[in-house]
Image 1 (cartoon, one colour):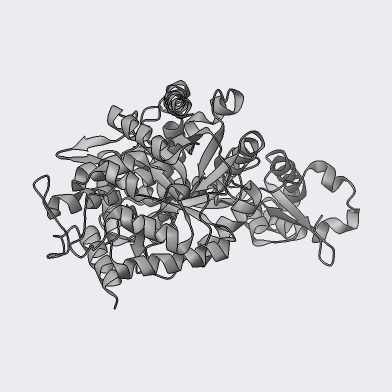
Image 2 (image 1 turned 45 degrees about the horizontal axis):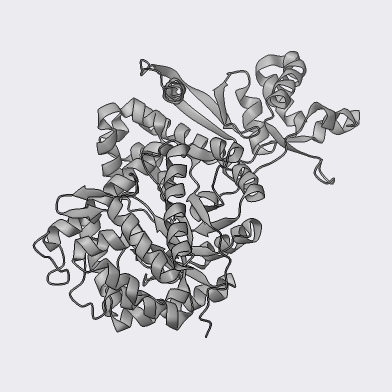
Length: 280
Length: 263
């Protein structure tokens, strides 16, 4: 079983969004790599693929999907996986990621990242599907922890125990969304540091940083606001535990001018640099 | 059935039906009970589909006005999404509006949805080179009769009885809502993408038979015959003028001659 990351360290990047196409391609600033949402480019042609070609020439890319439904109980969508593989042949991403969740059942797509019950049955089910996906794609994938608002009475494991076990048993890697850890820790009342302590450091390949909003007593993962201080603090703790990990800012709504995200990215870089220089 | 599948079926049902949470399966606490926690997903499902469809149907949003959200909710309730790409849920909207009360009583809604969707699907349709006048320059005079002019595969001809194109134009330009005009005789709109930008325009009565023929795969001689029914001996110069227009608009994607390879 492989236990090292093996994939390259890419530095500090951004989630690629249409609003920033023109600015980013002309003035990339301190952006070292880009994460594309795979589904946006699973199209026959036209402007999306033309832009993608331009970014592919200028940046290392990674592919991030929302449709694998790795925890789903419908059969794996092989047509989707084959489209993903075809896009990967063209894009040559450093890696491909999706989420530790399910997105639909009985052919209906809920278009949401639905959490799983953390049971032995679900664990074995996900491990089996990750292995099959990795075989189909011919590469290891990264799975991202999702924000959640519900939890299940039947869960026997913590979320981090479940994620760690999936990664170890299926030999996949982890995309750790620091904001999602913070949001879920608040919503379910666990300690975010326990989460970080519980993951195998060698399998954490990528960080997401993002914002959220408050909905009553719960936090809602909206990706529509700047990263909050508590998430920056947690990011520092993650760097302390996992070292230099490819990090990016993810903004999906209320997209600000690029300069605002570049400033957040620079902040992430300075926090990581300060900590790692101190440790060296 | 596995426990996991059973749980997912129950949860999906509760989300789509907007009902109460599964008894005992979900945990609640002092922050929020299970019902309020599930409501976040129920609300998110509806809002996400609304937002995705609003992006694909800007003309319909302008035309339907305040009723747009209810229209989308009715559609989503009747037709759960089945495609992994949320955008593709728009594929059935025009048909739903055509068939379903009360929306079917306003046919301009379905016509608008058809136009929006044709534009949306043309936007990222497969790239294809278009035919130019130079491609036709070397054609032998006796080959013209059998020549077939194939419009770009994504091109769509839409029949409509109202000025839905004016609504789409206004939506694209951020202009105020135009007045709705209904026509006694149906008109046709052509949607196609010559390069990267999608175009649409009205088709004239004189052009329609030839365009229908070209989309049908008719030969050049058959296109002329279609025009001759209306224009007699003037059919050939009219067809020549139309051909020049189509080439200029970069509408023709391929030429074929029976027994020969694609030109």
